[in-house]
Amino acid sequence: MVSAPRQTGAFGAVLRRYRVAAGLSQEQLAEQAGLSRRGIADLERGVRRAPYPETIARLTRALKLGEAERAELTSAARPAEIVTTVESATVGWQARLPISSTSFVGREREVEELRNHLQSGRMRLLTLTGTGGSGKTRLALEAVAGVEAFPQGVSFVPLAPVIGASLLVPTVAHELGVREVPGRPIDQLLIGHLRDRRLLLVLDNLEHLLPLAGQVVADLLKACPDLTVLVTSRAVLRVSGEHVYSVRPLTRPSLNPATPVDELLQSDAVRLFVERARAVQPRLEWTPEVVRATAQLCARVDGLPLAIELAAARVRLLNPRVLLGGLGSRLELLTGGAWDLPARQRALRATIGWSHDLLPATERLWFQRLGVFIGGFTIEAAQAVCDPDHVLDLDALAAVVTLHDQSLVTAMDEAGEEPRFGLLETVREFAVEQARAHGRCGCNPRPARRVLRTSD
Image (cartoon, rainbow, N blue to C red; front, side, top):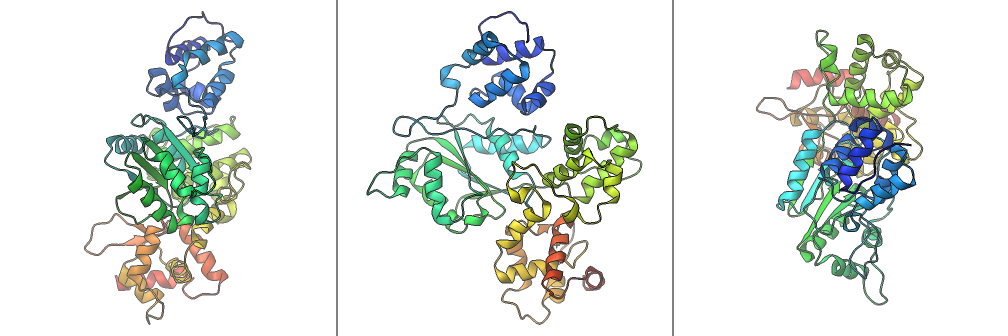
């Protein structure tokens, strides 16, 4: 039990006093409590003025507080600052963010940008898009945790389990604590509940409910002038007023052999791998050879957070150098995520497959055929290789635009008059696998590479 003199004070001051008495840094406390270091720092500085009951419970366990200390820490959070669940018939709703069991790593610039966007009041609909496994949900949660521009708070609605767009409104209403009234439509009850409240509504994993979900969001925003909506989705909503924020993979290290090891360890991708690997194999020695193998691993999986976490979980049995040598197929090796994650997040194939299965038949065929390109392609090259006789319902431009909106095709940042596009290697491997499974043409990357070089 931590021994510290009792005194009253603000939550941040009491928390810091107990942390120092326990001999823990902010990072160490964050790791033991399953929170982020930034979150601990914000609580101690008073930036986060609404500690959740779960957060307080995690902190008391991590600090090994006794009954008296626990009571002081709890009472230091003023009643108005503790987020609780209350009935919608009175003044509130369920305004509680899920707490992750792992810390948030990197992306400080993105978190700051998103917070500024949300607090500016200029973006009432902000959509975070990105490839499956890019970390959209974690980034959204980290960003909204530090936002204070909404007097009625933040409400998070997970939508991945919802199986039909018609269930979107009832699900949101249920999460907000809206009571059903006989004879009154649930959508009107939801609008009435939100109309005079200034709050931030986070709709997580909306892609499989489109396009109807886009119209629902648009209707809510029109009817509720003080409502702001943050969406995470692999596809854009395509409604008026939507601002799109692209969530890219984590920054990857330079693979130049001359790059210092310390510089490799500073990249977000390697930082995430090291932190997750330490959790499962604390005895691993991070020699220069191991760090360089880790950097190569992170590059091979495109810096995708989900892929990095799945790879790091394997370090319990396999050294990163051994793991790198066995990474012949990313989709086969990167499985075995935590059992408490959704099934589509326990394996890289399932994550990409979720996006693939949402595509209409023609777009799915285009996606599979585009897997032949290594190193990117132009629209002209895509048309010439994948559908030279124009027999498909979509031309290359329309198909690439659609697949880009679905976060399966990426725009390449290259100088040149003609834009180039590409697939992340993990995504391309899945496209090739699907093309072969369905016996479709264009599944051999080697001929396509030669055509690409001659046609550009």
